Length: 431
Image (tube, rainbow, N blue to C red; front, side, top):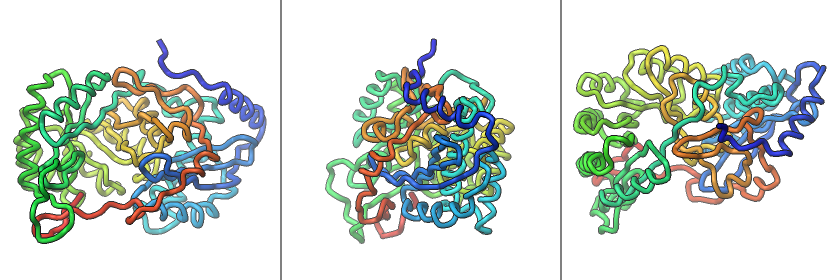
């Protein structure tokens, strides 16, 4: 029984128009490349629109790098746009390779996100031309829908347990659990109402020791309270030393986590070998990856279990479908990064790649609500813990560009960037 939403009438009419316009015509060429910079929700979103020389044939792609959004926009408009005008819109692999090479220096997050916006927009166009959703272009479905997880947190363990039970009641079978540390700036949860810990500075405080002890206890108690039939996840977010990460992975081995996320920072990847030697805790990594030099060794040596790349950070669907295939060869499953700082177009890309990848593990987020759902129409449907994709062509999403313009980037002290968190003595904590 199909649970995906019906294609809106206006989408069907638009597709019919495109089919009439493209029938019997030569390959479409790129006529214009523009950027939709909008903030209808909490995060700055950057979406690339490619317009072709064939009437009504356009595509959208995610280029969202929230923390440096203002830099991605000119990267697209000043560098990729003049490079792309007049090029065929149906040669995706060739276009990706030429864009990747055009700046000479490669694998930076700004460049990768700019290329991703172009790449995903071309896949959208390819789907619209063929009248098929992108997952069909990738070989078709390996599953009917993709399981997704939600994140819950609390200042105290009972709060985390109750939040997890509410998530389970909503149908979630995969839940990420985070715990606050009194007086400190925990990740994914508050620090409680306790008086701020005295430090040698005025910045937010984090100490690995109290966090580790509290998180390990929380995970054990949650497993007892929630039972064995729910998959539990936890994100360290790189905030502890490599030695502490090894120890923590050992300490939660009996919790049987679905995975432990970002135990190490990208600078400390060789320590994954030590974790593997010490315990069987499942490991997920990749949220901060930009370069093949980071993910290829971990995957080929089977040092992680889930690859969690932010697809636009790696350059779009074209490279990430290759990463998914690499993972299949080495027993690594996918868990693409999908929090609020991924646009609905990016979430659609995560979902379509998940549907078509045999080694799919789980997907993050993808439930689009509120103003974002008003700007981006045609998003996936959530039911019983799964995301169901639309069968509309391309990503299945239409962007209300007029409405998007009414939500410009909001002013903030760091323009969407992260502030710093420090230890008691003032040492910066990775995050």
